[in-house]
Length: 210
Length: 189
Image 1 (cartoon, one colour):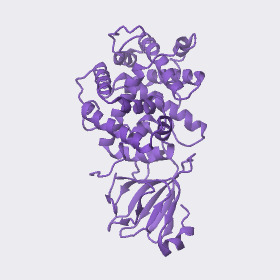
Image 2 (cartoon, one colour):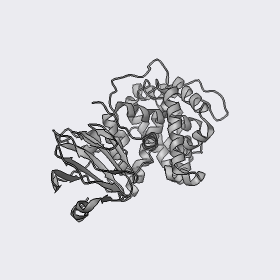
Image 3 (cartoon, chains in turn blue, orange):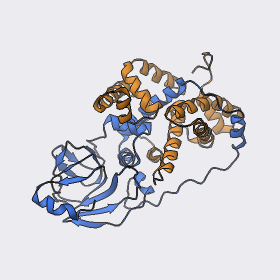
Image 4 (tube, chains in turn red, purple):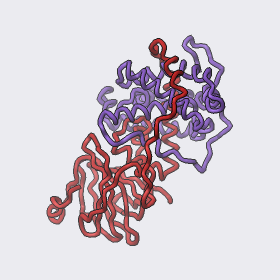
């Protein structure tokens, strides 16, 4: 797969520094699981973290800190979290989350929840849109980050196929169109809300629970 | 690498990690602990942790280094970069537990074999030296933003506020730094 659209460097830096909130981290991790170039960029940033750590001034540990650590070296490793078996060949980061069942939310469009208790009001979900579907023109009040796993959609800023990452903010008003053929499946993290445009959008707005 | 008196230490901390992996070498663990635990504590405290919490995360980081030593790949990362990622992941896990979010360090889930191997001829110390030299070639205003982000764990919005800059400027400094680092360090990872 040729990935054309990547997260911005600032976003990759925030991910590498561990300062991105959880919901956004999930969609970035999903992209990274599909994109060797961005994994490499994240590792470059991690080298920076390492260099800063090497140069840091030390802060004294409490007396006996080393002895306490040494006393624990023989202890067995805590049980690792088990990832659930991956379904539908989902990208690895998603396999750690409980997924709801698919529900129709409009003509040709299905939605399923991703159980991320986002503390900051982000909503995380997957969308599946049939080939040839045109989504209502909409804009966002904050940011909408999307990673495609399957199929492709197009809007003003280009074509987004498997692995592509769409980092849309409140300056974007778009009217995505799903390519003919296989349904397009993607992971979406939405901060703020969607404002549908036009009379059709206004009619649909209350029906869309996302 | 330098010790606290500024003397150059000849040992490569990557060798200590390898010694732990090969033969559970406790002396190597003690050496790693002596150098990195106090620095991790500083990093955590700069990021806003209490002294107790910084100490605790430093302890857990070094214990994780012991347990996961066999997974360390010196052809991929310097010892410092690897230990940094472990401390970062533990910090993220703790924060998410506080928020009771069902999330954790996703950074751990994306590691996989890369088809393209980086330059394996470099030692971990050479890598660390290259990174330090690269940081020396970046304008100070960009290094400042990198420090606030990577060492002090501040979100971009907080950095903008602290430096009294527009958010876009913080992001563009990160982008410029990244362009330069890609150019200087592209063969390292």
